[in-house]
Length: 141
Image: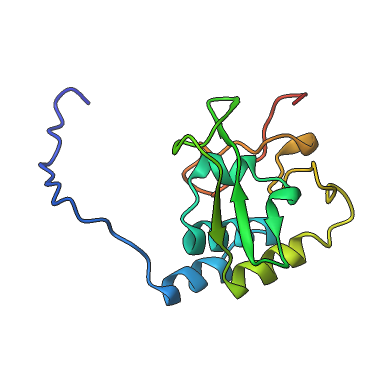
């Protein structure tokens, strides 16, 4: 690897975003209903990875069509959001539908439960590049 030269990259300051069609293709190709819901929620709310992982059902307000961002889960620790304050993010109808379907699972749907689960109902691990959320391999939360 020492002999391999890294190709030059330029940072134009522009952010590449998926089109709605590209997002929906990603959602359709998701490995699970939870993965599809997290892709859709991330794309249409702008929540950061740690904010998605810390999201609890009490933060999803279907009646008001908003998601309240109260926490972030980063490096194995629950913290305040990067913005430093709680904020409400509008929930698009497609996101509301995906989350409502996810909320019909048999377990972990109480107000204090996480929306996007890792193993044993713990916070999911988001470090994998092959999936939005991978299951934790540890034996506890």
